[in-house]
Length: 474
Ligand SMILES: *Cc1c(COP(=O)(O)O)cnc(C)c1O
Image (cartoon, rainbow, N blue to C red):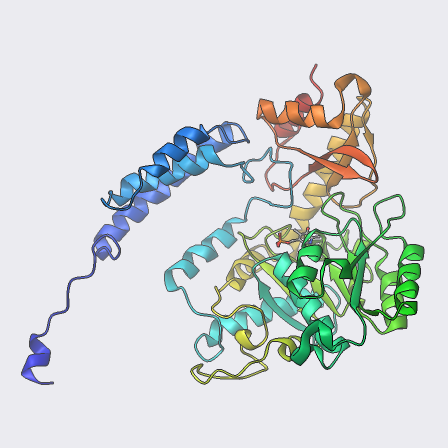
């Protein structure tokens, strides 16, 4: 060191961006308490947003970012924004889409990851994080019945996992896809899924450059499951017309109604035609945790790949999906690339060489802490509880003249109210206006239905009574 090195003192860090440790601790403690109170108020209040959104937008317009404001004040402002400005998926009377309140261990994982904020693109920079994620994925794959060599990775959610499955399928289907894209195929590439599939499949067809018409949305059997006869016919027609089938996607837990396609029959058909077989079990896949319920997913283990979201019924924070794949080399074939500045180019290990993302968050700790602290048994109890509560809602409503149209072994009901209450649209509008519970309107097999899904891990008997009362007053 020279004298001038010792004398150099760099500009002080910006105190708002990088406060001193004591100040951080103070704000952290304040935030922890303020959040607990905010969540307590949220649970006692309406499930639906009660914010005056026009007033809020005027308030927002006042943030021109010219004059800094005190962080503590901004934290209160942020909590109030979320307390009043969103539908509360973490409210025990949210009977909505597949967005459960996150488990506490998953929330703890987020805090830890926020602090270290590791870059999980490569195994060289984050060896422990990469190893931990691989371990969790292997455990999920084995629990789902995949062979011991199966692999995969965490994704931003189910949409990315589905997209990954499609790119693996396309890459395997034709050697020219990697260099020439869809035009490398001798005919238009097409894939099959039911018309009850998740809408992400249509977006994915667009993104992948094969076009939305490549998604063959096959008719259902009248009960929300793919019709095998219609599926066979669609494949035969496409083959006769010179198109190139490359993938069958079965849904294991449709978003609409929790229906499970015939997984074995789809596997047989895919094998017969040499097609990639993907099971979209974004929500339903969590059922592998339950010894009692997992038989509902028999056939999942025959898939080439599967989507199982951790942020759905495994209840981590968002967004946290998983792509599970029988041949762990398949994603590398789709995503490998050379980058001289990266610390390694290990096809077998590096997440950036095996997935859509490059810079990536350390997601796996959420599910790891959840599974490690509660075990499969804890997750099984969470899932079985939701199914039991669903059965309870069903019997309460059936005794009041409601009918259930779907026949799902999982925790979703497609309900038609008795005529005296009005149509499903009117019933849902009334429930949401009251704000005491959240349910949604859906369409199932040509009928409007009230859709109810038990998602929250702590919904109580009293919550169920309030729900039933909101649906069926009097
Ligand atoms: C939720 C869901 C998706 C999409 O997953 P995201 O995590 O929302 O991207 C895909 N398929 C099914 C069956 C789903 O339930």
